[in-house]
Length: 299
Image (cartoon, rainbow, N blue to C red; front, side, top):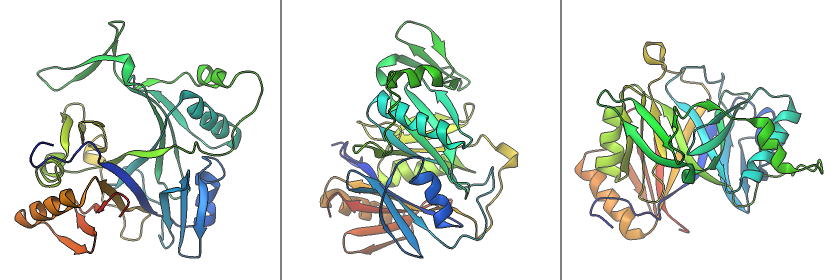
């Protein structure tokens, strides 16, 4: 592993979200998306797949997260087969919820929000379709497919074609695939360059797209380049969310070893970043106040 960089074993753990009403939120997260309810009380609900917690909903938000607020854009649950994505599309279609679908060339994605305004992406990675990524001198990004065609990465996804992957049986799985995982988290930002200084220079992620022209900055690891992303697409319309709004409470970064966690702790201290360590958990926040916890996998 390169000095000061997180290893490719790094992954995202549970994402904690604030909601205005847990039962209402469960109609999306559990009943439509198919996450399994692992535990629930008046204060929170834990949901996951394959016995692993992916999302924790926290009650107490007073208002839904307004659109174009600096905070959560979406949390992305990744599935490992296109058929799993098709099952999700079928559930969304049957639910009557408003959703959208995009073909990013490197992935195919379905988008929906819960009643509290928390954005959700269900994503199937298709990196084999990408030949190369071209960035022009002015920062514009073009994706070149293996057949040589150029793509914007935001074309509409053919949902009807996706649903044909389910065949003619009419059977739709009611549960999220057991091997689904948190693949990335995407936030709206004011000053992405300052955020990248923290995620790259202090935490140790690797840079991926860094384009003010395209309006997105992201980072990850050698294995998964797109793990934490920030966009500035709202531009001058971006607003701070109300203090009692739904949205991100915190997200979790799971590191590969205790040595890595100790190295991150040293870098946070050297950068005078706000951080608290309690046993095997480091709690910190980035320069825009987005909270995260760093832990060791299995710890």
